Each structure stands twice: as C-alpha cells, then as structure tokens.
Length: 384
Image: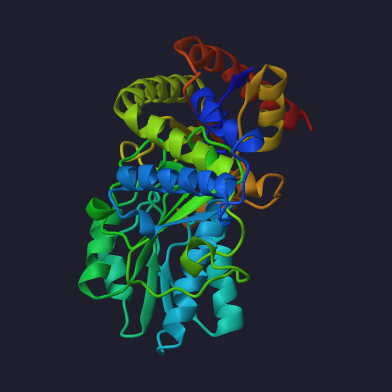
C-alpha cells in the first residue's frame, strides 16, 4: 500500500513506541499517587512536559496535556471565551476555513453563551489577510483564532503577523497548529501566540493525546472538572505512556524537520506538476508556495471524489478528499466553498499528503495511475 493520507494520521514512530513501553507494565503508577510507583510516573510526566516546552520555547507550566487536538482547541476557545465573558467581552474572531474543532465550538459559544463571532474571509488560496483581522477587532473582542496551516489545502497562514496585532491590543490569540506539528517551527515566542494546540498522531506519536500551550497569566475556565490535575486546567488522570510518546515523537519530528521538509517538498512539487500536466480540468487548491511540504490538494472537475478514492484504494493507494473528520459527508468542503469554489467543483476534491515512508517511486506510481482512473470515471459518468 502507498499511504498518502498523512494529514489524517501517521504511524507511530518506533522510537516513540519504545519510550512509551515501560509505562504500561513497569512504571504504571498514577502520577498523583505519593508512593514510588506514582512518583516515577509523575517524574516521567514532568520530564515530557519539559521536553515539549523546550521545543515550543516556553515554560513547562504553560503546557496542558489533553486527549487530542480537538480537545485542545475546545479548551482554548471555550475556556478563554467564558473567562472573558465574565468581564463583558463576548466577541470572537476566526476564519471560515478552520477545522470543525474550532468552528463548531465557536458556533456553540454563539448559540449557548451569547457570544458574537466574526468570520474573516480568505482569498482564493485560503490565505487570511492580517488587515482584515485587524479591521474586525472590537472593544469587546475576547479571542482571535487562526489556524497555522490548513488541513484540507495545506495553506500556511501569517499567524505571527496576525498574533502580533492581537498582542498589541491585549487580545488573546489561539492557533490550531495540529497540521504543523511535524513540519513547521513551533516557537511560540516567535509566533506571538497565547494558545497553541497540537495532536500527537499528526507527527508520528500515538492517537488519543494532545496538548495545549497556554501563556502564563491567561485566564481560562476549565472544560473538565473533578480533579486538580494539570494545575486545575484539565481534570483527569494523565495518560502517562501517551504523553511520553508524544514528547519523544515531537522531539524527533522537530530535530529531523529541515531535512524531511526539503525531501517532502521535492516529492510534493513533482506529484503536483505530474498530475496537473496529465489530468485535464485539474487545479491545485491552496497557496502555490505557502503550503505544507508534503501536501498536494486538487479539485478535478467532472468527477466526484468518492469513486476516485475507491479506485485509488483498489490500486493500492490510500488518499482522501479532505478532512478525515468530515469523511463520508455528501456536502462540499466548507474550506473550498469559503475559498470561492463552486459546490460542484468542490465535490471533486482530492488530497494526497506525503510522509516519511513515501518515495519517488510512490509519486511516479500515482502520476501514472490517477489520470487513467479519472478518465475512466468521466467516461462512465458521461455514459450514465
């Protein structure tokens, strides 16, 4: 199988798996317990927190461990918005191309907590204009949330510039960096962000664990209560083996980032040019240069995504039409429609995302096979 859906998930790095191993059968204590087994687990937890903080260039106390990137986004938006609402600030700013972890939370805050949400538009490449964000700011703006890189089209947003605008006005800024974890620099000081969400399984760590960077001094209302874990910000016994695996995977991904980014960018560009040259009606979506290194996203007119994905699967290629969280949805991508694509074109979305195990041979195989698949589907649809 040629796996081209690394934006959906990645395999666990064997080095991360090895780091996790002792904490299932040997050092399995509850990190809140005071006896030796618990203290060993607590020490591993804090060591992981310190390692992650070193990558993010922050203090260990500013890291909150969660169950996934979605929970991290929820905790950031709902936690800060509700804390700010108590001070009379109920206005949120975000974009229409965010992951549903952000969009659905913003909608919930509007519906149930009387918050007002402004969705700053994006251009044809999915790029947010910092000036448009600045123009949307109001005296009661409680939070601004703009993703670092888009999961469906790979566009990298000017987060540092937008966050600097927010910082100058004293407004907390959150970024969903889930797609960026293994590919972009994550220095929170350089990014100017107050909150940053990551999910381990996007950078070769285990599923079921994530983190939220939360700048010291920021007010946040916990989404989970019931214990004092994570400095009263997220109740519940911490998942020690997964946290350890996440820390190790993040260290590895960031240490190898420059070399892997260059390799993936070359494969991405070859795959893009090969497919565009051989498939009439194919168009690259997202920014042509400001995009994730292994991310190829297309709309292919005259064909819908599902039969393409089935045919690719039968040919031994795993791909997707966009966000894995929206898989099976009959509606066009909210990202593509926000970028100005008509609904029919958006139904022909294809996402091919490369990772560590992919080779030049994989890319050439897809370039050779996909045009024929598209041609056959178009022929069948035309005969229908």
